[in-house]
Length: 234
Length: 76
Image 1 (cartoon, helix red, strand yellow):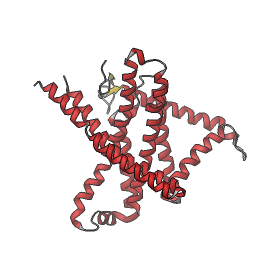
Image 2: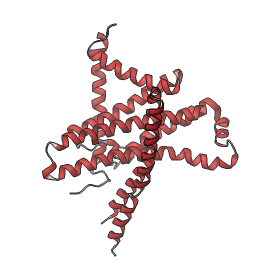
Image 3: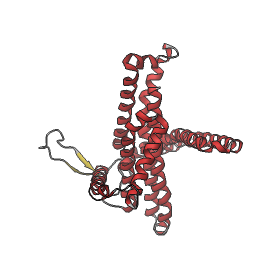
Image 4: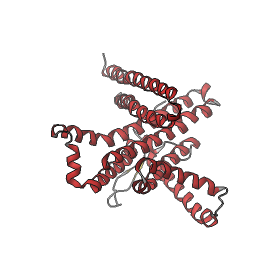
């Protein structure tokens, strides 16, 4: 049995394609693309079939959709207030949908069955988006000068410390999600590799190590992102 | 001792970060239980603060775990 934290390279893009010449195609990249495609198809289906049939009295699919969207909106607005909460709800929902779909694909084993967040590149990308959002909202609220000044309070001595703390945010966000989801995946792989344990038991354990773990990590990622943005604009 | 053995030892040592995380999380959970028993109506707020704190505490253990995995990948 061989479990590595490096992703498996399935193929290389040919050199002829400009910009991406020789880019490796890993199994996590395939899962990420499959998840994105599945989400797009689901969104299109919802747009074509569910949305025109929305009524004043919700029923069936409409109930589920409204529950998800309103739940996320209520959560972000509860933390950041009306204006910012409304702006950030779609981004947070996108992250939740993407990582949730990856967990679902891992669960049913479609494609290469290695979820995208078990690749440090994927989680670091998501964390960088959050980092940019923190800076953009912070600068938009206070201006560049005010933002720099907030680093230097209460005294200019701690400026470098605060700078390092700020730069550590994407690293810690990325490593946390990467470590947790990779850890859950490794436990499940170990379980499957032992013949005596590889039936019945995984069905129960994957409920924890795949579903609950993934959901928890999404929740923590969203909560921390909102907390950091809240800190930047206050 | 071969380099591989040393790498494996280092990976084992790296996972010791779990010790601190475990103690920290147990302290936080104990205090949260105390707070809920004192003020049951605030349990929702306490819950969300607790989960945030646990997440941040847990990440120290996760860093150790990630470093252990990175070390294990070095074993030839």
